[in-house]
Image 1 (cartoon, rainbow, N blue to C red):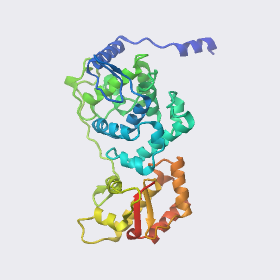
Image 2: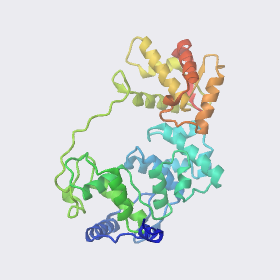
Image 3: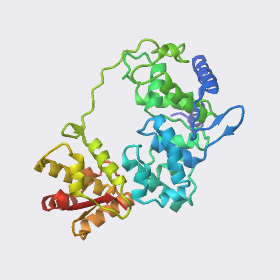
Image 4: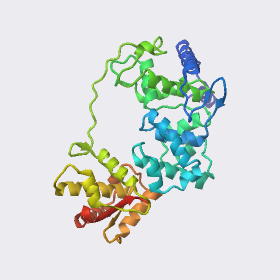
Length: 375
């Protein structure tokens, strides 16, 4: 058995960067110093000023960027920030308020999780976003990538940041890959990520990798002849574009359900807070080209609306405006409390909840419903 002192010493020893790693670090930081993209959520330096964003802006940007293009975030984040200029204001937002402000950013469940995260920051951390990785992970809607990104970009602490784009760049420069879909093993990528970033420069380093991934080392058609890393990249100039298998997703009448959901929410966004929209109006709006209704359409629409209500995105009432079952109240309370996530909540229903929803769908006609964004 090895002496404990030697084991501890081994753990504290960090291998010195190799000549190749030093060259890679130099190329990336030199390029970033000259060509870094400027965003309001990112620090930057120029001949006039040095801007360091507040952690709240970084949080907003990281949640928005998860599934939305950067160009759209550049346009929408300032508008969202004017509506919710502080984490305290965001924490007070109703579902309807935040879903309206989230227009154009996709996946409304992300907006609700962001608001729930703001609530937790206000209640547990007095409105100050924590800088500790584990404390960030404890917040609703914050996963390993977002937590590490906040630590690096908002607080300038040393930490490895890895998302799908950074992993793609690391995989290509470290390994001889054949197609654009290939990546290095996750464990190898994690080890490289923790070793390669220059200590004290985690923010600039990871922002630089993201820029290179967005501008040159793209997912489908990498621009190797223009890439500043081509001289040190193991896969440079030799990647074949992979034939990508399109993911299957639920559809109805040839359109993905997520598109239908988006159209429904968009229609309801136009209502005032006190207004309701009838199920008949919604049906006719969605299927305006049709001269007749079908049972299949009615049943499908009722299922979609039930799911949106369960996710606390839409509020549903019957024509007498008095339906408010205990099951629905309890279900919505669980959504608000974070007992189960907005996305995929349907898979977490209890048998009793499923039975109640099936009963609702059997007894209720789409035409008897009134709708609005959840309050």
